[in-house]
Length: 490
Image 1 (cartoon, helix red, strand yellow):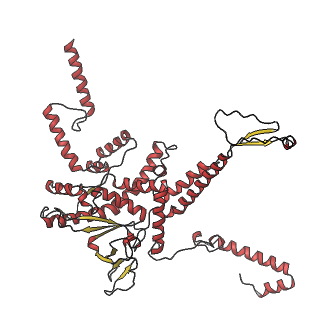
Image 2 (cartoon, helix red, strand yellow):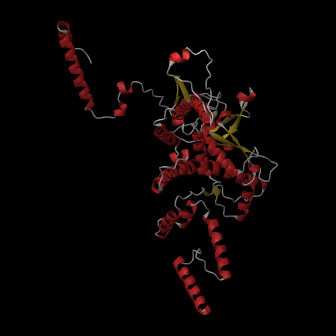
Image 3 (cartoon, helix red, strand yellow):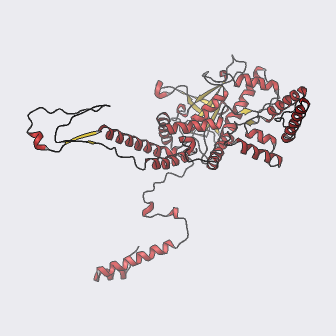
């Protein structure tokens, strides 16, 4: 607020009057600003004075920040049960026992089965392809990034192995705004002059463990880089739950403090006080003190002594505080409170289903936006190309294919199956879509239904589980047959 000549004159002759004038003018300005339309979040005043804002570039964080967040996230995963449960819950619900390809050709299906179900698909010989899916999702959740390298192994029927590495092996020293080809390198990832990813500079071993080592350039065609894209132009991913890391760490400290408080209180279980100081002071006999207590102990106290038992302070509000904090932590991880904590004490069918459906939408995003289009489709293309080279796969084999994600476990199968059946009968959902929602391949289910129908017809039976017949009609036929049998027996 600018002081006018009149303001200065009044303040010179009467400081008290000048101060009141300035206070009134300041109040009028505040009211006038408050009446202006605009975003409150854009205010610059005392309330927002301590709000530090990061840069507005496309990167969510600098390379150093991402590295630090990654280390803290790994530490929480190893030492905090809620972080451990959250990351595993995300991975297990996203990949389940495996996201399966819908292969129609029997020969191609058999070749895929032999490769994908074998640990030969893994460069380290630990997991089959479906286990690799789970490991990739878990690593991406914990560290924000995971890279899959294509290893061409000539000694295999399908010359393809998958090597899973973390972003720690990226040579972050390779960072320049101008390469010889006119591109740039960001955090070990090289781009051409058009901004397209060209490849990755990768160490063969962890440099901080094995010492100095040289990085090798891997073409983008031989690398699958998985991370969650939060903003356009993002180069590296950030660990899941990064917004909850500090809250979870503080909660750890709070829980440890509460535990230590109860331990200290429990150590002081019995207090013996002297109520008659003179009698004890004049006593010439050595004082025998009760140092420990045990079940069944009988202690004779001297005159003038009194026993008091300690009552440890209760942890008031601990449960409510825990639920509030862990609820916000679960939101930061993108999981439900129940799935992270295992606390189902306040859940009924409706609330449980609503929470699960919200969590399921996030899981489907991981499946449809990251795992299937990048990991599954990328590996399928590598698999077909490797099979063509070995002669096991025809050159007419498709380079893209449909994938079936694992089905969601139902909270109440009776109600949910009925609702799904009604949608199919009303034409609001196809039978194939309903089958895929349950995690099965429609083609395989249809073939099994044909086989079951033939077996039932050959045996001359119409079980109530046969979908070709009306359940109530079949049940009535069975009841009538039983009635006829009873009459003949009579």
